[in-house]
Image 1 (cartoon, rainbow, N blue to C red):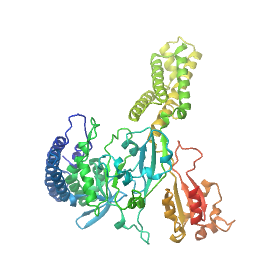
Image 2 (cartoon, one colour):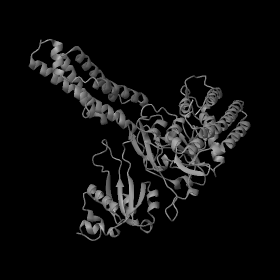
Image 3 (spheres, rainbow, N blue to C red):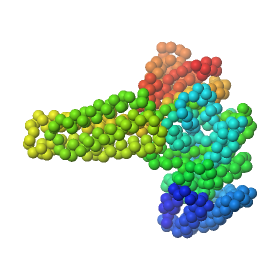
Image 4 (tube, rainbow, N blue to C red):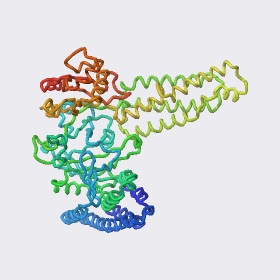
Length: 607
């Protein structure tokens, strides 16, 4: 068995559906399977030298993985016997053995891997990392709340003076607040059990930069990274052949860590009780992180929620950081200084709001009426076409009732129904019923109807078919729209970008933006053609002359290109994430201020 086959076999998380779930027994069962698979592992496509290196590493991994598995089983046994002191000591032994194998990442998902004399910087989550840019946190609600809307701390970690409200989570104990973040909003929504109404904030990590604009790694948060087998497999596809030593090192370390990651990745689908035995090891891991705060400050982990609905569109991961001291009004000062996050924004899924679906419901109702008319009026229509009309009507009727029921609160069920309806539409689309439709009707009716009647029947069916399967203004487009809007990854999240010609121009800007809970970025203006082209596009979007950015008026493009340094800077730009579902009034970017000062910025932020 090759490594990639092994990684497929040991995929995580592990889901169980029995109420008689006992975590220690399940772990021992899965760990035993894993060790047997390791014994059968053979990377047969390597040349002799590389195979020898691989086997040496593999044997080391087998030994460590077996030792770790035995100790974790002992942890569970002592925990069940309420011997928590022994459990903790055993777990500390696990972590001490694994310490050289641990993957420690920065907030952008980057880790350092040393193999021999070589050290490289790589990202194991090639598709899921936010690259240190964006994170999300949500809070489920029953309706709008002025308290939440006006207080950004409502979407931060639970304050220490309200720690009694912090509950048990996978990586945190009740009474010990942690900041949980997801790298994409849809995942944050799933992690909070698919609420139909919620507030959310978008987070931005603030890197510590030295005077020469380089990141000061000594001041950055370090995260213990837990990867899924699929992430390791995806990362290694090309690395194995381009940099074998690095690939071999990563695989060796991962195979050692797998028993620990496995112990943190069990899901009991039948368990809704306060005691979550599948959280035992993951919570002990967080306690270890808190005790080893100088080395690592949080955990970066893959999600254990059901990714079935949207796996083709996105991949994301979670981050959890304990609220470490010092505190101000119960809020962790170090965490507050490391993140900028937006004021809470309210979201109500459109499909559960009748006032947002009125137009769609009207379209579907009229569509169904047209089908009823086509079925009532005797038309020259083959039986297959009649059955398709009936199927189209049933699909539309189900969709209409779904949108009319604004009391439904199970969004997972909503997604499954929408997915099923979309599959019905796709099946009917693949039938290609409009091809030679008049000939098909004439042949089926064997000349009983006139040419005009056949033509009328084909025109009527074609309209209904296009209203059902078309890309725009159709039943299909309504289904697609609401599937997309449920995930809420089309929302406008404004970011303020400041173009400047030196640090002296933006003194105080960062603190103002951070304190105003705005997402922001800084870009230094370079004296080159790229700057001129970027400003040209910006001016076109804003509907202003390119010369607006210069003090001197009436100059031609040649002069402007040669006098980039005379631009009136800083330039304050608002950039928005717009889509086909966005408000048409919202532009992808707009100029807020040219020649911005600290005073002007403060005035803009107070509006």
